Length: 203
Image (cartoon, helix red, strand yellow):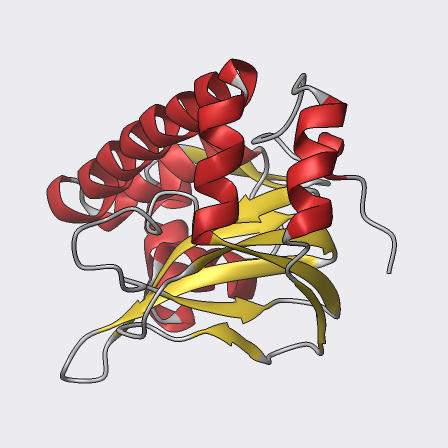
């Protein structure tokens, strides 16, 4: 498996010699996953970061009642579990699942700590990722706790462009497809959305 660590947001602009030396001493492990395989399980110990070298993955949460909520979707090159490894609880608050066949480079917590302490560029990247993740969670909280489904559909289109796959949108928005279809139809009849060749767009 080939994976250029310097393509990852966490290690971008870092000192290649410093990072390389530490990784040579503690290289971690490589793993391949097929579509729908579980990469990490909600509630389990989080002792590493997962460098997504190829493919895509998504994070979901499952309540005690079995209700599922898709929190985020990610594509390579990306780093998974960055906000979790240094948490007090030290567990995954989400389940990470392969959206496609994907390759992962797993790097241990102490190795990441050594790199952060040795390279200020990586430290800056880490803090930026944490801040961006907090902002992302704030937006998601606003979308799912404070907005109606209609408002969430409008926000989805504003952020992602035309809504052209109801099944995928329902999955991301955490609703059943029939509920999404009814809400879209209502927005079209109200004149908020219009159907175009690319999908549903804001009117």
